[in-house]
Length: 287
Length: 159
Image (cartoon, rainbow over all chains, first blue to last red; front, side, top):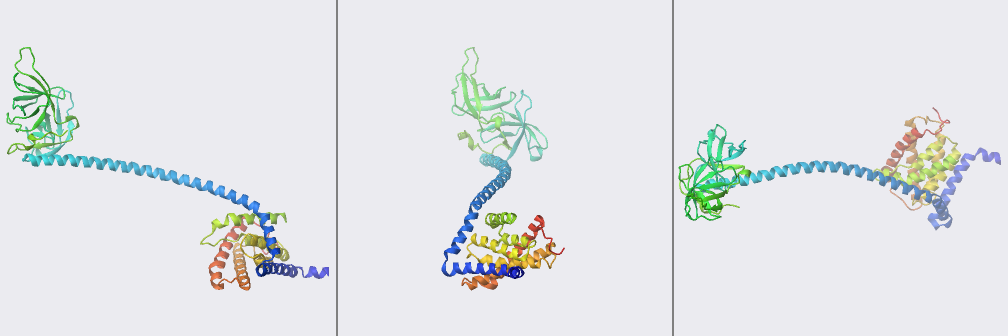
């Protein structure tokens, strides 16, 4: 018997396995046998603690790995975003600058239309290199039809006049230059004087009689006398007025120019004197 | 025996926790079949059949299959692989791959036939084509690679 079993052991083992499996299946499928269910439960119970630990370990590993990958991705994204932000900031800055420049140009062109004369918009490309003079360099010159003594203005008011011209650039003497003299009048009282530059940022109004009606905040415009500056261009406003008691014949008047020379970027050169009175002379200057 | 039990436990853990993450298009490789295949290369057919039965039982217990389904399928596969391994060069990756694919297909076919027998039928042709065949190929590739790395004792086969 033993020899027989040994001889057919292979077939016997296979048959038994197949039969056992088939019986288990039949029991479970046909009648929901408790034997099959119990066997399944035992098998599952024997492995489930290990499964729980293993699954948890794998989950932790996967989580750590995913977080590591995410961290690397976030770091890379962060670098890319930083670079993008930097580029966008640069672009925004450039666009903002362009918009501001367009706005200033637009105002100057509007001014050109309003004064009714031929005018050229120019960029300020340099300022005086010494402390003794108050001049600026603009990017238009003889090639654009600029000539000496042409009047330079901004939206706010008078800037000065062209004193040197080259082919591509010109130098403008500001009204604050100590060598500058502009015929002006007090708009309210129509008193005539001369605006002269000083070493500071203010201008002095000279030759105003002691009895002239001048008050602080009075507006000063060009008088048109002297043949260079047309009448009616805003120059500034009175900031200090005094009558010295030392026998002087004239008042001491100090005025603040409307134009801010320290922040000036574009100016307009009037190529010809206006055909009629300037319209902006009656307007309030911009703040 | 101890090594086999450890390998069986390892296969259970990996098949449950890791292998589902390796699924491609819902098809995952069968580590139980790979374990049985590796074992069958080094043991006699009757031991391979018994091992197939035990592996199948564990596989059934970890799945929704009726207990005995995979045990029924894996027993003859272990038996056949063990018998065939004495006839072919199982040290060659190509042969291993081919045998694993055949084993996978056979396992699928037996499973489908048993399900049909127990009135839980699946469309045979499409299930073989779209489930059993891709699974067999995936198992074949993974198994060939794993067996190449682990180098099981295959001294009984042709070299």
